[in-house]
Length: 249
Length: 381
Ligand SMILES: Nc1ncnc2c1ncn2[C@@H]1O[C@H](COP(=O)(O)OP(=O)(O)O)[C@@H](O)[C@H]1O
Ligand SMILES: [Mg+2]
Image (tube, rainbow over all chains, first blue to last red; front, side, top):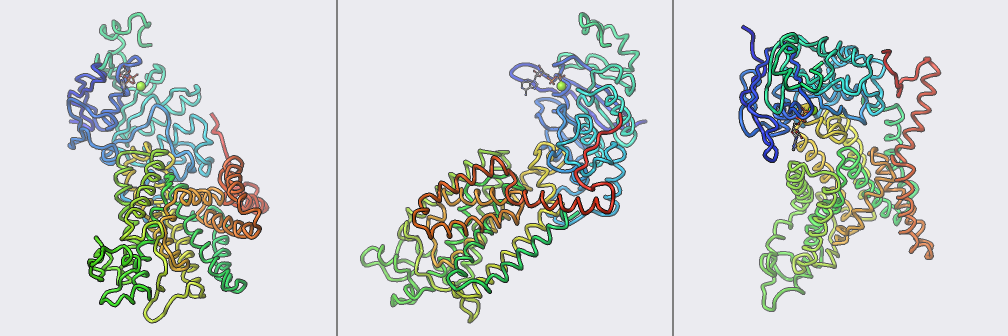
């Protein structure tokens, strides 16, 4: 029996009476790649906010493996093993690509533990490997502000991987990307698989078909359906919800 | 990599050698003046640390400087001959006598309300310890509250600004205890064992030059540590840093406190050579002047900001010799500030860095076909 990496149990939050996320329960197995689908405003980003501690939940609980992390401070949730990529890419713009990765590779978060110079040979090697994985070897000494949109996204994913996050949350990682960049991102996500459990919000159905195993569909803050691509596409409730907007494809 | 290029350690070495050699060419009067400029240089570096590296524009740096200054000045005031000749068993500052109620006992414990606070300052080392502890405690409390509440940017500047003005007001208001507006003057000398530091002497100069060198090298090393790197990361994107698991307020507070401690030390050293402490240390204009020094010298450079402070003060001293220009000076410095902000946002330090980097790259590319730094590449799709 597979181990559950993330367990969301009846979570919910209201914004001024609007149930942005309502009684959502999802279980994701270790090593799984789960795609979260839903129209704009369905509550996908808010769900990620609830998992990562950005928004405090009003109802329900979140577990990472056996640890309940409901409403912990953001940095504590991150240290527990959840890495998050934002919809708008965010990296340390004034630092070089290598330094960005160095920051993320610091294992001990405390100030005093980090009052030391340099990085171990092992850490340096890991950083070099990560540069290769995200395809930024030639840009290692480039200040992050000068990276292209796609490169910035890959660097941010690199930060999460080198941080050794157990669960990685990706919010629309291919938004605004060219076709070539999207393909490279799909490849990167496939590389993440296995080492990390992944929850990804994505609109691009071609992309979803390329990477997804299991899909959860959200609608008006609730889980509408869950299953394989084929099952989701055949699901009458999903079809009804998307009726008028030409189905999910 | 510890240094951005090989010129940087060289620049530090040259600067330290220069200030150590300066007494060879300075007379007694200029030596005393120059030691004050070195103290200002220390303040410039402290601003660079907090503004350039932590992204905290503290407009109340004078609070920490003033706290350091007053704490040591209290001890030196009690060591002054004017305090020792009151015919009591404890030294009593002259101004307390003037402020005492008729019939009050001429003893430090009870001559004016609250004067017992001065009692431990009879030990000079208590004054020194407080000169460090008070800025550190103030900064720890202030930082913990402000940064934990995620107050940042302009709001931090406004809070620090309001705080320095408040403390300045309190000091002026507590006239019987602090000599208010007039500050603490007629101070005794600082001494270690039997040795007395003459404000105009070589020893005072070297004490300051030595401590400045220590502060420069120490701070530069500090920002090269992993913690320094993480600090710069929090400056660039606080949210990203938080979601990588760093407790951002801890990092900000830690470096804010270091910056405050440096200001406290600077305050004590300033008292040592200027022989007074005054509420003007907490004037808004002084704190803003420190920011100008750092901006001109380069807020992203610890050494640059220090040199900026020294240069501006030397120019000011030169200009003040011409009477007609004294009044114009404020306008000139304002103009320099505006020009630097507009055209040289990284200050003189940034300019020097770019020049050296250009030189370095030319030398490197002389031996290998590819420049090592700043290459922007785009991945093949
Ligand atoms: N901080 C907030 N305050 C008020 N309403 C919000 C807030 N965040 C999200 N919402 C609302 O919650 C709903 C879900 O938004 P979101 O999670 O961003 O959707 P999605 O990411 O699926 O497009 C939307 O109706 C949005 O307007
Ligand atoms: Mg969204």
